[in-house]
Structure formats: structure tokens, C-alpha cells
Image (cartoon, rainbow, N blue to C red; front, side):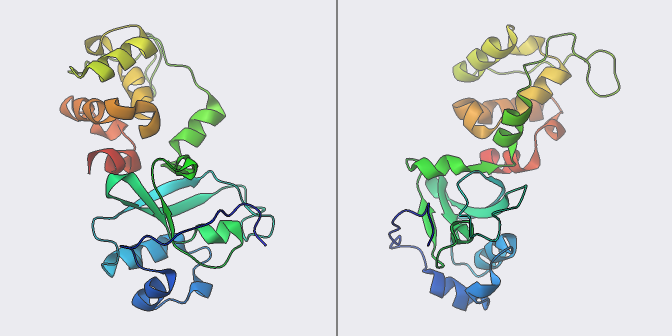
Amino acid sequence: MATFRTTERKHPQLPSVAEVAAAIRRPTDQWAGKCDHVVQEALAAGLFPGGKDRYGQYLGPIDPNSLFAQSPTRQHAWIEMPRRIVVDLTRWVFEAWEPYVATITPRDRRHRQYDVGGLRLGRAQDRALPPGPDAPFGRSATSQPCALDVTHPTAVRLIEVYFGCTPDRLTVAQVFWLANLSSVELGKAARPIFQAIQNAGNAGLVPYDSWRAVME
């Protein structure tokens, strides 16, 4: 029996696990370890209109009887519906439970167990402080200027708190560090910051999964 699973109520507008299995022609006993395939097949079948595939780290608990109980990593794929609702078709594999479709709203405490791009996990592991204005970047001994044209009050304030300067005084190293914060850490500042980074010709500094989660 799973230790961590909570009571789940089926969302009335979303398919059941049996309906998903029938539509993608893949029985649930073939889903374990294939979360990305299941997500892609379910989206291709049109089962989750408006949904987008998301990849990253699962930060929730894992049952001792789970296939992934001894796994050092928890790479995972899920679907994000409008209003940031997480639909996880294979959460039950981590929980060692019978198959079901997990529907998790932003107010649900489990919502923070989904880390797009694994950025929050990486930040927690290295706990890197914001780089100063003279911090090196790549092979350069010093970082080049990388001014951002940001006017959004929340974004401006966040940059001032982290770096002690205005957005037009940032360096490439600082923008890279900023771009690699998770969308949860950036909050409402994420979109204007990412847009400013793109406008400055440095969209490549933003992780692909983070860009998709915020900008698409």
C-alpha cells in the first residue's frame, strides 16, 4: 500500500486513466518509466486541449515499493493545463498505487513538487549567491555588460534586491544567473525579464523548459 497518496477526485472535464490508456493504445502496465511517451501520446490524441508538455524533476515523496525508490534522480514529465493545473498521468508510479490521473491545482501543496527544468532542485543543491558586477562568465575573466530594458515594477525591484543595481547596469553573468531562477522564484517578474533578455539578444541564456513554461 502506498504511504503518501492522498484521496483523488476525478476532474469532470478530463479523461480517466482508462480512457487515456484506450486512446493512446498503451495499457497502464506499460507506463512505468515511460512518462514522457505517455504525455506525448496523450497530447497527440487530443485528450487534453490546451495542455502543454512539461519536463523537469518530481520533488514529491516516493513510496519504498516504487520502481524509483532507489533512483538517484527523479526526472519526470507531466501536462500543464490552463491556469497552471498540473495533470500527472504517472504520479501513481512514484506512489506505488493503482493507476489514476492526478489533477493538481496551484493551491494544492503538491503543486510545488513539480520543478520545471529542475531549476529549483539545482538552486537548492548549489545555493549559489547572485554574482557581483566583476564575476567572470564562460572563458572571459570578466563579464560583459548586458543591459536589460525592464520597467515592470516587480521585475525592477527583484533585480535591485538581488544585484543592488538597476536593470540597465547588469552583466552577462548576472543575467545568466537571473535567467536560471525557476519561474516560481521569479513569480510575476518572469515574463517581463525573459522578454527583456530576448530583446537584448540573449534569449539563449534562458533554459528552454523555463522559456516554454513562462512565454508560451
